[in-house]
Image (cartoon, rainbow, N blue to C red; front, top):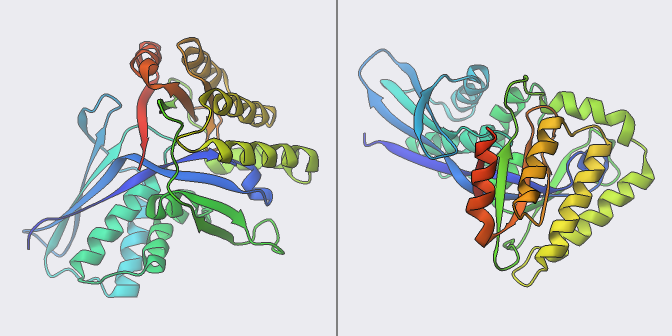
Length: 321
């Protein structure tokens, strides 16, 4: 067989982090860079050989260890059970994953692997089948039931996520595919991984930390809702970059009040703002080693990224896919 290669974009939560758990909407978009999965038959006993590479923020490809082996096994078991995956020979799976965190890499690589396996099995999957396969790996990778927002964004593009009305706080998430999201003309997004020395805090840990401060806090949830609406209005080519940057900062302030910011996050924000960014905010769960996204004038892009990298932060331009 010829080598089968499939890819999937990563994702970025623009607004709605944490508040989405309590009924507010969240907005996520698919972004470049991509995760890639290549599949080919090799000599050996039936089974899988996995090779993993990471792409650094500067574009260098380096060999790495596969960390989420249990999550990958769960995905392979899903295909064996649901679609009778029984390789005739040994299959070599080569994964290429962006090194930076906070951009939904686990969902992206799950989607890429799923697409490659469906192609190998000569199955044209429905959107639901592809989502369920991706979510299988996501659930294990996140240590429980993942919200689904990452899987939806990497598969469908820009999505609005919101819990179904009338359901309890652990109810099912509903996703609405949005029309193409655009930045104001002359703007770019920079994503920064703020992990340097201290261990990274997981998404589940941060959700638990935020819960007592946000659950039932009607006033704060209304503030998150207002920011969501205003940010959404500016996500078009005619949007006001100064206004959008101010809203990014306002969204960050709300997230920081919940305890999701750190010294590293604040330092990265300061560097971005001091070098010309319109605004910057946490994207995702936050906490130690969390990611931020900065709205930057295109003519300041190189300066902002260079300043962040000089301070040992992984930073790259994220292009809306």
